[in-house]
Length: 99
Image (cartoon, rainbow, N blue to C red):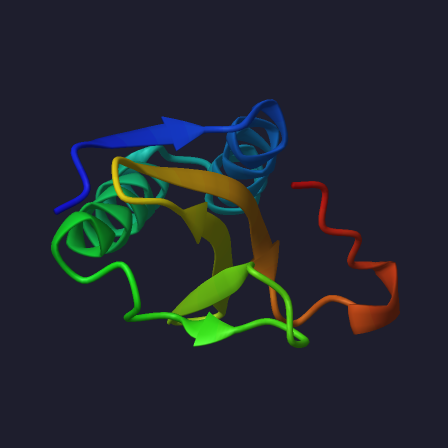
């Protein structure tokens, strides 16, 4: 069983940008807080089910879909490393996964 979750700098930056976008767009923190909790809950599920996400382009990277967001991650026996959070409404050609 995986023991810990590590968020990369890129994943944290992605999350801050997404939550900030919704705060600016709606004008309240309510939805941003709700989305933050949902993203964290999705990642927490990976501790028990690390193979839950789909493989990404025949690499060791996997992704979990939460609504419009793809949570990219890698895992080992001890750790889940969240690499990126990607809004699937964006141009997929702009996606660069740094692992």
